[in-house]
Amino acid sequence: MTAIVSDARSPHCSVIIATWNTRGLVGEALASLFQHNPADSMEVIVVDNASTDGTAEMIREKFPLVVLLCEAMNTGYAPANNMGIRMATGRNVLLLGSDTVVRKDTLSVLTGYLDAHPDVSAVACRLMNPDGTPQMSCRRFPRLRDALATYLSWHRLTGRYTMKGFDFNKTQEVEQPAATCLMVRRSTLERLGGFDETFAILYNDVDLCRRLRKDGGRIVYNAETEVLHHGSSTTRSAPPAVRLEMYRNILRYFSRYHGALARWVLTPVLIIRYLAATRSLAAFRLFSMKTEGWPG
Image (cartoon, rainbow, N blue to C red; front, side):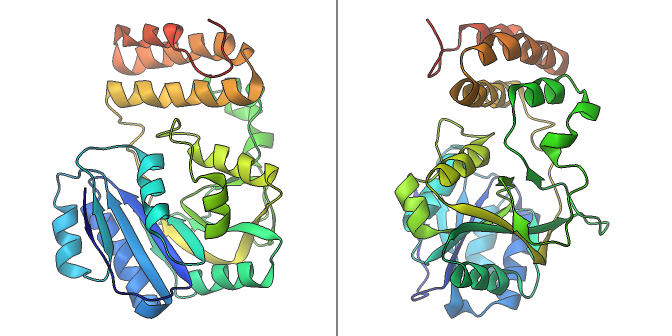
């Protein structure tokens, strides 16, 4: 790993972006950050997960104030963000997707909200599609039945979980906002140990929010600002090895929070989905997977 360290001092906020082969998008995200925020009010940390598209070179050339951490291999979303969290010096940490564009007031609104509400540990905002519609970015913590409905594509049964009818114009407490734009107190992240790296790709933000609330923290959706989120097809087009790890993350999460029954209920469903997507017999490796809380 190599690092290029910014000379920003005492920032109000450390912005952490994990990226892999998103050169154009992350460039747009960084441009929006520096356009709208004084350099001395923030530090920006980018963790590049061994991109091969020139991402690191572009950042070195165009954004010299960025703290750039370059991994030798793709370690996944959770480990990359934890690396950034360990480097952060701001009193708040903004976890930001590499495919976002912040608005003029995004950082100031979120930072100001945490400063004004000491009982709130994390705050999110509205995520907007490129066509101007809001994304369904807030969720309730998923039950086992929600997982079944989701992975069997019974979407008409997921309204409670996806918070259908959510009022995006109302600031309110929520259980699980997407970590695409989530500001958390650095002291809270340090106390919780950041993301659980066993959820390298999926459900790491859900697990973090559950642990944050268990720690006594409140999570709030703030309707006063927004970010543009391009969205990504990365997971939908994931190669077989990455998809297998995604499904392992799913099984680990539901095993941890819903017991051993989750393994026996969800494993066949995920195997069928894996076979349909990849035609690979590696799907059956999910049967032999061991994780905490599982027998055997």
